[in-house]
Image (tube, rainbow, N blue to C red):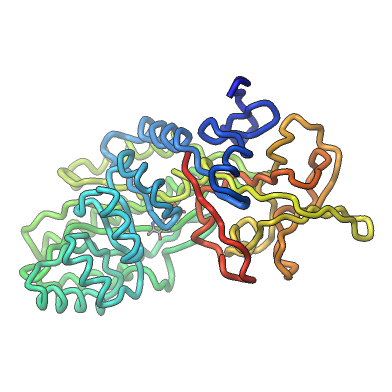
Length: 416
Ligand SMILES: *Cc1c(COP(=O)(O)O)cnc(C)c1O
């Protein structure tokens, strides 16, 4: 590598470049293509993840433990990297749990949430010593029964579905009727039935939602969460002398995907957390406070890369047809829960300094009009073989996409 690396500073991205080409971990896109032998691929930048997590930990109060929710990106080397950066993993399946264990995360720092855990999920978690975040009364009974069969005592935390919600959130996961957690108002009854000789109650988990860019909304939910946590602790004290170990106050920190979105003001949230910690000092004494984040830790450190395989015009519209699309990146195609499709930030990864002169529609190879990579974007004039790069792609990418749909060639992922 004889050309010096330059920094590609746009409003959204922290990636570097070499000449006209984007780099990930000092490798240019064409070098990465050679490493993995083909496009399309996802590439994750190790240093960007480390920087991001370090910066966040500096901003958040010291009393907060940071967990990573593996479902955002379960790529094994990325999970391995994060094992050294965060203090716990949240998993939502047995396979994710095994990934977390194999990455060396201590089992007591792994929590297993999610509705509908199977008998074998529960059996594995109890055997490993992972903490089960129980989502219903029925699940508690299942856990107690399976633990008895194993002659072990299970560690659980109760996931609570509060009466409040996380406002202006991309995905609301609390308030009203939800499949997640046990309704706040049912908790007294659940605690009454809980036999603490049979089970270790380690904590409460209050997760209200996801993909939120509004610091005020997160602050408001956290205020209500602390208040609820205090009530839950007082309630628990009526049933047992045993101390609860932690409150997981959820997460919900979003990342900007679209043009009109701005970065979340985390320092505002941190300042308010500091106030809350002080305000609730007496009730929360000795407790661990956990924030669990998925996309916020990894989304901006990942790109999806595919190649232009055909260029055509149809009745006045220019199309770039690529070898990748919806089957690898469902969220970018607008089909992962979005109401209106918007473009993720897209560039031609080998023409970074090129003047944007052409409006194009970028599509994938699938025989469906849903296979859109970008709609009406202004880019430098593209040629066959150019790299189309989709930013903000480090979370809910490969594992959240229907990769077998239309039986296209396999996708690669690499952390550099
Ligand atoms: C999905 C999920 C997360 C991660 O959400 P992000 O938006 O990626 O931060 C965290 N906790 C729970 C319980 C989840 O279901």
